[in-house]
Length: 167
Image (cartoon, rainbow, N blue to C red; front, side, top):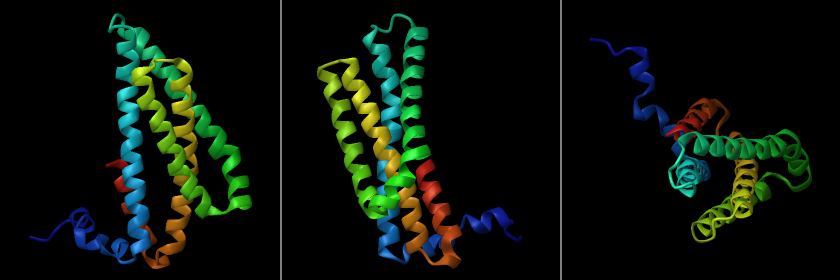
């Protein structure tokens, strides 16, 4: 019996090049933790918006969630579509890779605040800060990964990066 090609590439030993350099491991870990937090926020904001209406009409909650996710997506488009290139040229990748998680943390703080003070402006600030932070962090971490990983192993490293993000 010979393993199929798909089983071979999934063998954990194939991912070891991604773990050889400590900086690459740190970037992968930062990416995984921040993506997990972002996804948890996306999952719970819909529940939060539905609860604000007392679970009365699921269509209203779905519409509010859609508007909110659209708003967050708009912020992401603005930052990644126009600002990140200029900011990277002006400030460099490391400052943006550091500023991104700080903005995400501030945004998460606003999400915590709306549990006690359910105000649309706070929810908007939370979404905007989180989206700005993720928009600065994602591309800069990706760029840093490409610089700190061996060019012959970038496929493995980026496979880990995207796999961890999807996980």
